[in-house]
Image 1 (cartoon, one colour):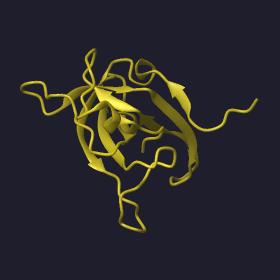
Image 2 (cartoon, rainbow, N blue to C red; image 1 turned 180 degrees about the vertical axis):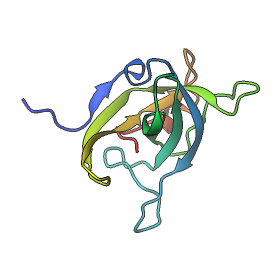
Image 3 (cartoon, rainbow, N blue to C red; image 1 turned 60 degrees about the horizontal axis):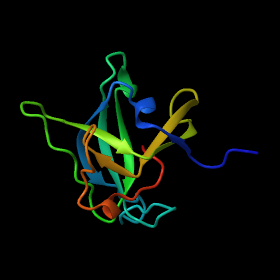
Length: 139
């Protein structure tokens, strides 16, 4: 049996030390300039900029984007007073490995997606549960 598509993964496996959201923005298709749509759900894709709280993370591994497919822009958890970012957890995450050949030599990279966002240990942060339905990949 071959593995097809993205692999389900727990939030704590991807971000064992937690994660912080910096912001969220719509993903636009480069060619059409229209919102990029998720192939599985048909919903618009949103990119959440994330900082990995792992003190050992360096360089490109320190900040990533997680794609969330939702009818409306996902609502991020509240900011921590005095800090410029928000602690966040992603619901029903998945990861898709791919070959990134944009550098001097090809490397394996990972695309992250989630089905929703929430406060750490708390409830959903989105406007309504259906607004955060998502696919599987992040940039």
